[in-house]
Image (tube, rainbow, N blue to C red; front, side, top):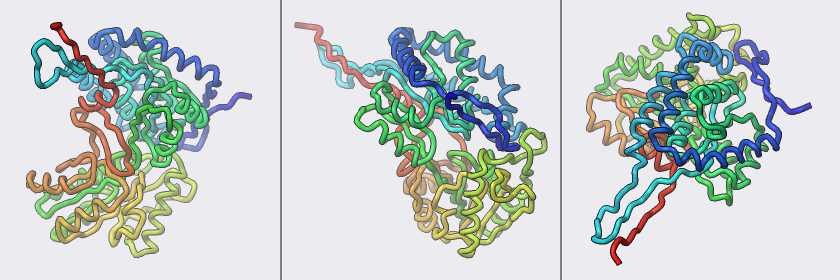
Length: 462
């Protein structure tokens, strides 16, 4: 009997869907098809390629009524929040809008009489996207769209927890009339993925996931000289200064910490508050957190669904238990019959009296728990913000933009926010430092990372 992938829904623990794993022969055929299709796809104009992308977007959005409950069944996000298509449309249309300018040849900055000199941006070839389950559409389009627009072909391997997302992309591209082989969705095992990455048949891989997964990708690709884009762990901090607008900071940071059950790449996981407003902030944050309604994500009143898998929730329970043993105070401590070991249903939690000897303040949680610490000044806050192996985003809450920039300059992170958090602007490059990974997505820089430079040095006069 052939190997299959079973998607276990967090709603009730049943098998939601099951799909066969591709055979090696089927996978090889997909890769060969992508390679064969790439020259013809790259030969189209940028405008022609963008036209296909926009038709795909239209087809994908047209499926939203079916996709929203699918997401609830697959990874637990409440249906009240809809799909991810606001962000999908924003990112896709922006990358299409800037494509001509971002991909045009770059003339040499010092003209020389008798010579034409410029750098072209060539497509990489075959790009593989290994997409995660937490924002399965948003994270995937970050690479799929610019890679295709730049002239590469794409092979998508989606997370087992969100298998239907890959199928939805495939249907949308088919509806758009995309040439055969230009985009393909595959269901393959980890061992097949590692073998493929080591084969030299893939020119670039983009992976969003754990640090361990990123290391496995690098190891598998070693010696192939393929390029890599790795968005890995995060422990995103917030610093609330004494001049911050308190109600705004409370409301936005609570949403940044607990939306999607805290399963956000750039979600808020730790908060540092100036001592002058600490007590008021904590009081407001606790009240905001208590308003979240844990429940079945298919029900309209639910504002927090289950985590995608029970083991993720159990990890948060372990972090919380360790923090409590070391002196932390839990302020929500909700009583819910579903909140037990082995259950994906986990209420939001707020901890105070925390410190950096507790894993909840330094190691990624990726769930609905946040620790809040009192700080005396900027120096203390900056040192604590940097005391983590990760660096994706950091947010500063203040009325003084110059002050925010000075703080941001000292924080080890890929993005600095002021008075907002947990958002990805497609006009700004998405990148990280330290164990958060390497590479860059979106913006014009995202195109640079999905192309290779080719120089032309042409003598006109002999």
